[in-house]
Image (cartoon, rainbow, N blue to C red; front, top):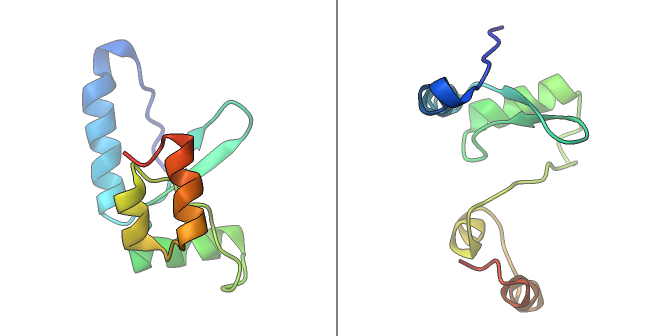
Length: 94
């Protein structure tokens, strides 16, 4: 395990390093305002399998996925018309 401290001076280098680790299928532990979050590439079977193992989660129980926009969400999940309308009304479709 490697601990990366992100500061103003190394922000770009640290983020690029972490993005590369995610592309490699690694799991990143990241503090949030309330708990630590586990981050990985949602399109990587290798990463998702690791995440299930780490969390000791049953395969039928899913994880939340954070995406940039509606187009990305539609590539990863089925979004029906009522759900799409809610997303568009929230102003988060772009």
